Image (cartoon, rainbow, N blue to C red; front, side, top):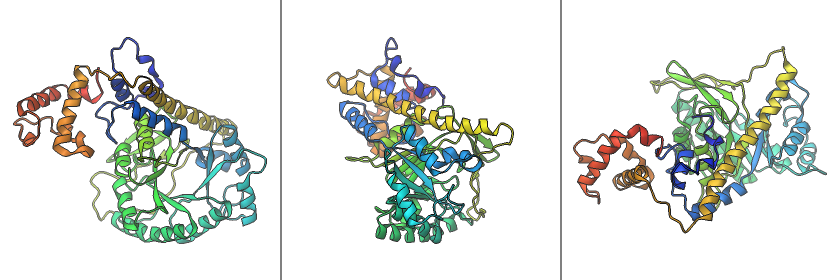
Length: 440
């Protein structure tokens, strides 16, 4: 992903001859981008997108200031102040056993209730993180949540074993979480944390019986170490995602796997505009995604968690957390830089959302002027219509896998004229790379 993709605003309108739909698709990565199919940007979609962006709740994840917690003098009050001054709607606090300056489990119910009340200040929404799904830790997190009036806890599996064994164990552990959450009015969100892939997370949630007390948290970068495309995982989990971690990373190939290095938002390889758009569009009448938490991870390293060609009997060790390194030299400067990175990542994410809003506003302002498609866009539309008739609406983009069809056999039974369809496929084959990056 070009780091400047979402930084070019609608200044591309004048003189380039592209329609609003074509510009919108280009901003999202092109008409063949992964994830959810790109819909037509009409006035109705524009209104929906504007409403979704207005309702978006921005949280600050505690890992964004990890170094300031571990190597500086920061406590929870300083974190609250930073989030409040930075314009966040809320925070994500981590449950640990490391003492009052870092964790919450050592605190009394009275202290936790007073902390959550935030008297005399703008009140921040609070959600909790716990890096396990072990019963004892879930009980600890639930006690803290009840004392603070918190309704959402993020969790993930770090278990070892075969993937089948990890999935089976996670199902049993999360059945307890689901029962606990149902009884206490808490929702546990399972994160796909650098090892498990989107379909495997979905298998776990299906095995538990996903309901109001269980869902998924989508982390933008975690599919990379799991050897997955983030948009493919988002598509797999589209029915269960309730929250997200916003970050950017550079992909680092390593043997048969890939790791990633955290970078400033917009400077990495992730398809950020499409991820944001897809998340905002989840849910029919009401937004399905309840919050997006900024998790600034500049400088952290996540090693490969999965490798191509692994056997089903491959044994994984207990998963350790990814780390952000720090040296003694220049420590204070590094801590100051971490605070600056968290602020800048939030501003960059808001810029992206505002650019989505600008497209939506343009669609709403000219609802009675249907866009005329140019020849390239018309070709793409015709090809996607063939795909829709061949494969159905959810998978219409599979037509791109069939554009080398030579005898037209895949086109039998569709409502379009076979000769015309074959001609479109032939032209598409010749223009495949051009079409993949949009109308030019």
